[in-house]
Amino acid sequence: MTEQDTVAVIVAAGQGTRMGAKHNKLLLPLGTRTILEIGLETFIKHPRIRKIYLTVSSQDRQIFENMIPEEIVLVEGGSRRQDSVHNALLKIMHDEQVPELVLIHDGARPFCSEKLIDRIIDAAHEHNAAIPVLPLEDTIRRITEEKTEVLDRRALFATQTPQGFRTKLILDASKQAIENKWLVTDDASLVENTGDQVSTVEGEPQNIKITTPADLERANWILKSMSNS
Image 1 (cartoon, rainbow, N blue to C red):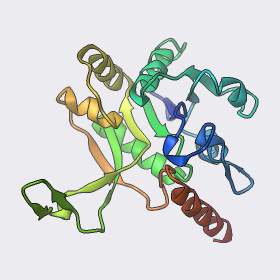
Image 2 (image 1 turned 45 degrees about the vertical axis):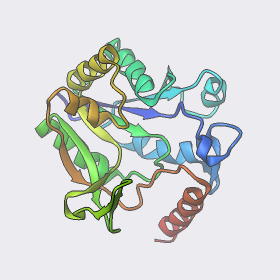
Image 3 (image 1 turned 90 degrees about the horizontal axis):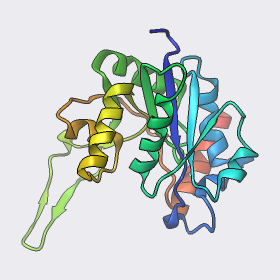
Image 4 (image 1 turned 180 degrees about the vertical axis):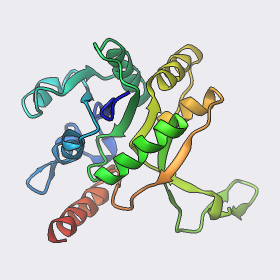
């Protein structure tokens, strides 16, 4: 295994209906570029990532082909996020050099840092699967028809991407999800559903996911802060 035996899957096939845009939200401007272009930059430049696979919808494929470096491999997205990831994993397994690790990242998180990628790669090498998390700051309350109750936030964390896995581990978990019709919201859940453990590393407050117009406003503020620092 070499230091560069890691590939990244960037998920960009969604339409982002909560953003209210008429096209893929990753094509929206962020500063002088698009959300996607800013998010890809860190992965393109990272010395430990050998190749990038970008999942896209068929209607967006030509747009993406005209704006991304030709070395990025485009993969047909599926109807759900987990289907898009599965398609990318199958594509990776046909690579002439199957990687030891796969990082899976939301294209809507443009501010992932090089240091966070390093932490995930190191932890995935050691523990087979790793995800970034952040402790919750707000009081969290469970509300049902019968009652409301405050949960102990010391045991609750927000989950981010990129999430890193041994390639065979995540592929096998993804295949089981297809066979058993599991519905999950993140890739680590696939691995946990098979009985394997997932380790955690410290996430980053600026590694936000842009989902709503308010998120985009916050992202522009973060971008300006990063430019001035």
